[in-house]
Amino acid sequence: LMSRLIWGGRISISVGVMATLIALGVGLLIGLSAGFFGGALDTFLMRIIDILMSFPYVLLAIIIIAALSPGLVNTMIALAIAGIPYYARITRGSTLDIKEQEYVTAQEAIGSNNLRVMFKHIVPNLIAPVITAATLDVGWMIIAAAGMSFLGLGAQPPTAEWGLML
Image (cartoon, helix red, strand yellow):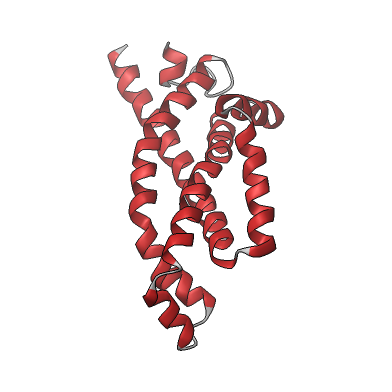
């Protein structure tokens, strides 16, 4: 039992980390685009995020897994999709604050293109709150993946995974 617990930790932790990284990457791009460009793009992207946020996190993950079929990879994808709104909102809020700073205005005044301003000046300054949120979210993703496996939607037997071992 102890060896299966240790071996299952590899799987559970990697699923939690990968789901967090996928959600972080997609949420970062959505939030950065919405916050930087604003206008109709911001409204459209944030309404999609609002739709995703209107479902409870676990229920949204269960719906996605049911549509994709049970399995460890599909659980990771479902948890990542359910986690995107969290990072998109954090990134958008930070981007809206940072883009009003003088150094960003100065870059725009000297003619820097949007990609340079976004990835050279805004992203490095919003990484701190995003990484903090991601480190806190990894544990939640591990628990959610274990819950999905416990319900029969995650890892399938005989895989050693914490949710299945419960």
